[in-house]
Image (tube, rainbow over all chains, first blue to last red; front, top):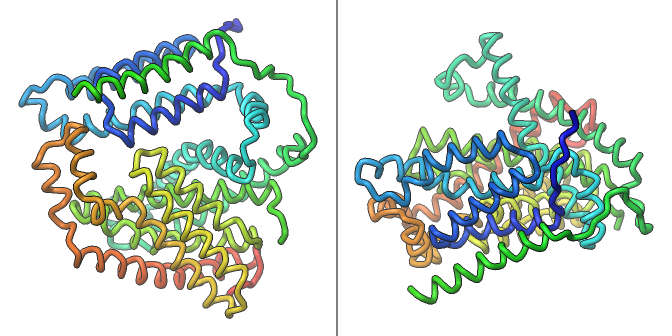
Length: 231
Length: 199
C-alpha cells in the first residue's frame, strides 16, 4: 500500500542542516538542543520515517540524556560517549530529514530556485550522498580480504599498512569509476548542465508546514540568544 | 580556461568522499594507537595515505578548478561536522594555491604534482590552528559543552610550540613520501587506464 505522508521543502531541510552545524560549532543551551531534537523528530515522523525516529530516540535516551543528569556514575559515559553522540545526533537527524528517498528531483529544482553555484553544490551533494555507500563498500572489501586471509586482524593491518592500503583502496577506486560513469550518464540524460530555464514536475513552493518549521528554527536561535543574555 | 563539465564535478565529489573516508580511517587508527597526539598528527598521516586519490583526480580532471573544489568541499564538510568556523579557510586557500601550481606553472610534471600535493595537504591544519592560536576561546567552548578540566588538560597536554613544528614537519614528510608511493601505485594499477603521466 502506498502510504501518503507529508513532505518538507528541501530549502527548509537545508536550513535545519545548517542549524545543526551551528549546534556543533557554538555551545547552545541544553534546553534549546532538546527542543531541536523534539522538532526534528516530529518532522521525521511527519514525513513517515518512523523507524529512524525510534533509533534516534533510543540513542537520545541512552547517550544524550545523561548529559543533563549530572550523576557521578554516569561521568565516564558522559565523557567518552555522550558528548560525541550529543554533538553528532542533530546533524544525523537533519541529514535524514534532507535525504528523503524521493527527493533527488526536488533537490535539483530547489537548487535551481536558490541559484546556488552548481560547481560547488554538485560535488558537495555527490560527496555527502556517497560517503555511506563507500563505507558500506569498504566493509565488504574488508570482509573479502579477511575471507582470503589478507587482513584478518588489526595487528596485521598495523604491521603491513601499505599492503592493506593497496588491497583496500585500489578496489574502492575501481568501483568508484563505475559510479562516476553511471552518474555522468544519468546527468547527461537529465541535461543537468543545460543553463536554460528548466521546468520541474516537483512544485517548489513553501507550504504551511515549511513556514512553521522555518519559524521554529528561527525561534530556537532567538531563544538561544535570549537565554545567553540572561546568563 | 576550460570549464569543468558535469562529469568532472561528479568525479570531484566522488574522490572527495573517498578522501574524507580515508581521513576518517586514519583518525580512527591514530585514536587507538597514539591517543592524545591523534589530532596533531592526523594531517601528516592523512597526507601519507591520500596521495593516490589526489593523483587520480588530477589524471581524470586535467583542468584548473578540480583541486580548488575538492579543498572547498572538504572545508565545508569540516564546517558541517562542527569544526571551528574558520577551519575551512586554510583548506580553500591551500587548495586554490595547489590548483594554481598544478595547472598554471611550467615545472616538470612530477615536481609540480609533488609541490601542489604538499601545499594541498597543509590545508588540513585548519581544524588544528585554534588549538594554538585561539586557545582560550577553544577552552571556553569545551567548558560550555560540558567537558571537565580533566578532559581539557588531556586535550592541551601535548599542544606545545614544539608539537606545532612537529605537526607541520609531519605534513611535509607525509605528503612527499605519500605522493612518491602514490606515483608507484598509479603506475602499477592506473597508468593503462588514465595514461602514463608520471613516467
